Image (cartoon, rainbow, N blue to C red; front, side, top):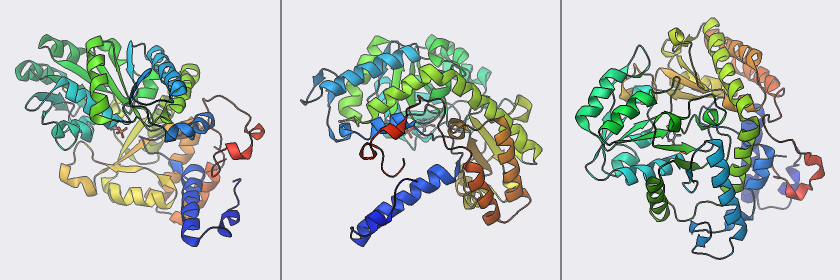
Length: 441
Ligand SMILES: *Cc1c(COP(=O)(O)O)cnc(C)c1O
């Protein structure tokens, strides 16, 4: 750690010093001392981070590049146009709308374009991972669009394709949404898209979780398999700053999306995201395939290792996982809430999650734990490292060793992974301290 906190202590009023210290503690703990296995998170590269904390964070840019409502944006325009082009190339798509400030805003925009009050949308079943924004509790419901779940096949742990095709024909929805948040196996885009197009429905593929795997060509590009629109977050397996994006090859849809994102859901689109997202897009262009390949190898190795340590891992009959995620059933080990808390006590960070078998009312103590390997893959962990981690988790959760003892081991283990991989190398020693992120580097 480069920063000496005492420098702040002597000159700041104590409540102001507290802000510095608490933030510093967060950074140290979450970035350097914990194993982060939250499936929806990642870390940016140092270069992307450096380009994130810039003057662009202070500026406004309503409208599209070169057609803004504010002056002073010549460089922002340049970056935004480069980003649209680079993302278009990476995902092999004609139109890119980068102004949605989150995946939820991307979904809200697209749902509003495709449907209105009283229209029907068919959504991937909650058991197959649908996100809250796809449901009556989220933006879909807020727009007054009726939420109808596609049928679930427990054996395949996926959408029941035959029943779904019949449902699409009967319901004739305005659109169908695929993709999800608890997501081990790809949804059947091709079959669903054919049926949807037969009844003039559009297919939205929510790639929030898997955008980085698509960039690395290790997850089918849904646009090639019949999806009309992709929505995504730019900070899950795609390791950029928090944000959203919308991709499509259909010009009319793109135009409608651009008219809804601003002014309906976004006025300013948080401009400091743009250079960092652009650098991350280039990282995915240069290193994405190696990264995505290692992510999937790690997820599969971790699943196997956890199973052989005695954990109940979902999806054994299907090879556990084809994504960055691994899902555990910990009902017999005290349930998701207490296992997640025990893991946190030992500096291993996960989230509790409903499993397909759980009723929605089990939300406070569901049976599952959702794990993602993408961030620790960025920090350089490989298959054998995940085996070691699985055995630490067994010592903690199954053998019930003291969490303080395991935490000590976790902190030591974490010290082996201090450099972000799959990123451009820059010699930060040559950058003046005042230009660095002061609390991190
Ligand atoms: C995370 C997630 C979102 C929402 O993304 P935010 O960027 O957090 O708003 C949308 N859809 C799915 C499937 C997600 O997992």
